[in-house]
Image (tube, rainbow, N blue to C red):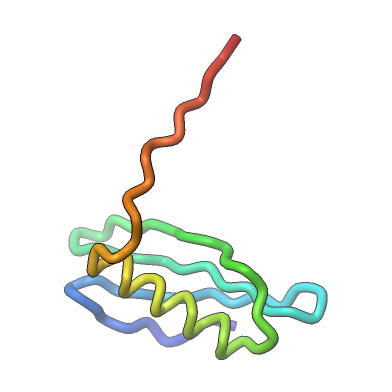
Length: 79
């Protein structure tokens, strides 16, 4: 299930919801001006597609508002 994209703070938020093993998981796409896209997810499972999509959209809004904790870069180490 693909949800209708929404505009938020000059960006487009789109959600792709998949049905897996009786539950629904969502992946969020954030498209910034200039066409740069970023995928976040998949998020945890929800009992309905609407719940999964709503969570992803709210997560995207929080990300764009700067309310999420800043995560440091992940560094791969080789031996």
